[in-house]
Amino acid sequence: MKRDITVVTSVLKANDAVARDNRARLDRAGILALNITSAPGSGKTALLEATLPALAPQRAAVVVGDLQTSRDAERVAGLAAAVVQINTEGGCHLAATQVAEALDALPLEGLDFLFIENVGNMVCPAGFDLGEHRRVAMLSVPEGADKVAKYPTLFQPADLILLNKVDLAALLGYDVDLVRADLARLNTRAPLLLLSARTGEGLTAWLDWLRSERTARRG
Image 1 (spheres, rainbow, N blue to C red):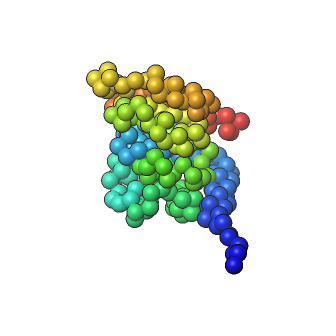
Image 2: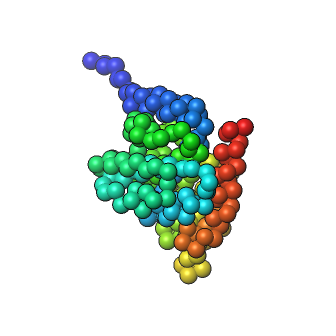
Image 3: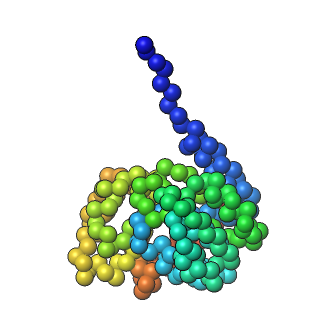
């Protein structure tokens, strides 16, 4: 006997609805929200450690997503206006409902930026809108130059792509041209910025982009 098959899309639809509410709430507060995605160990926390003091006097809060521990949140706690840790207890990405709860715990008034450090994963976070205004995809030199081609869903929706740890590029024989070529086939909209959170190389261009994006949104 033939049976009807129901395709369930309610999870993503529900997530998207909450994401829209999050974005509207951030808009009302005048905050630019950025969702930073990458593989584990790419340097998201190190980037925030370099970024937060350099943005002063503008104020930023951070939402940190991890499977376990609050170690990354502790690293940025003294640098941000406020920090919320979300432990997913095995979940491979943050969801909009979790970010909504974090917003409830943040002093939104007077903030300029919200950085959402997503769980380190190059697959799961790509499909979930959190209510961010801009999505930043990060890769790093030690991971190898083939990650854009291998994980296109992470890089296709990105508004900016960061290549971190470029101070190691010569030592490891990293092929930046391959990254550029893969991005040319996948995402020509997003700029590629080369930087090193450790040495500060390229940090100015990143800060300029952040300030420009916030000015554009407020305008």
